[in-house]
Image 1 (spheres, rainbow, N blue to C red):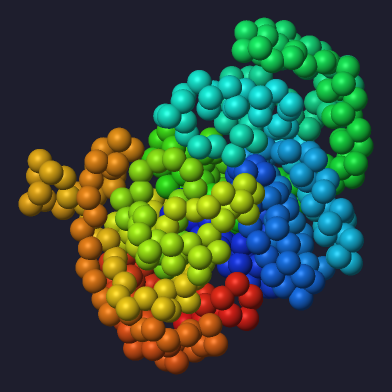
Image 2: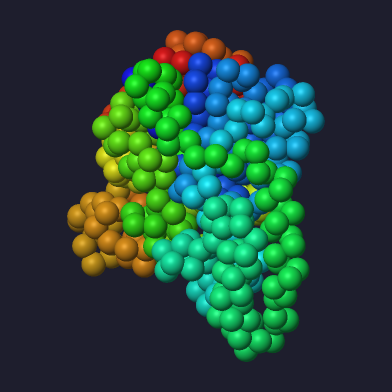
Length: 426
């Protein structure tokens, strides 16, 4: 059996979408196991450019089945729009898409609650996408969630909405917001469910049959390991489990079935929203990375904070996920820089002679640390045309090999542009 998990090793936005798109050419199944429409990925292939938030990659391949597992939370409007956009591009998707009825649904009160939480925190706000992801997961674990199963029965759905509005509307009133209307929400969700009813089907049996047949299964994670709810920079993180181990619970497959874990890392570091980022650059170099890397969020269009590659963070992520190989993306963004730096650990003012690791503290502690760098010569040559590792400038090769050594995992893919063909496979 061949089961490959693709996970982010930084704070998301590592270009996982491109890596999954590349690998999905030979996948029988591509499955998403966590997150919601707060995670976006851009895919460029022969059918065009797709900016997706929920639909698994592999949709373009008529031989590939796409699965959204119960670990994913659904914004139904987003899902409906993506299905329509893909099919309008001439790609048949409905017969190949399976969406677990166990998926929790983002309801109108969830973004409202998230906005209230963010505003109440003031300057300490998390910097969320305000799409209701945290509140929908909170409702899920507190037994207040509404699942696709519930949308299939109007009476059950109406009663569950009634209960939630009895809890949520008093909160909205206390913050000067208009209460939500049960009838309007019921009609909206029933209409949305009617649009996707034919793709709502449990994939557990399909997945386990594929495991028995030793089919090629590709697991697609959203966000990055440093946004994981347990191991990320809490509370500046996401609500779901973003690491490879989360695929077992998020899809219903045994952990031992995952034989290959590809960790995706940018050749530098980016982050959206608040939270510590030791290697952040606010100077002209940071501006160059943002400009050359087109570093703006797929979902929010917010500018991403940019900085040097943090080998300390990526090494932690590879250990956490059991990464077997790295995909290093956006190497070409560094092409114009005369020197490049890599963070190898952190120092603190009270113990300046000691090198600290990410896992030794929390988000506040990390924000108080200073990065320790090594510096290498840049290559100042374009690399987007390169398709063989030996053709890279020697200094670019040295940079990749240094990352390999510091992280402790071999680099098997180097991306030098957004298109699928702009990839070096080692």
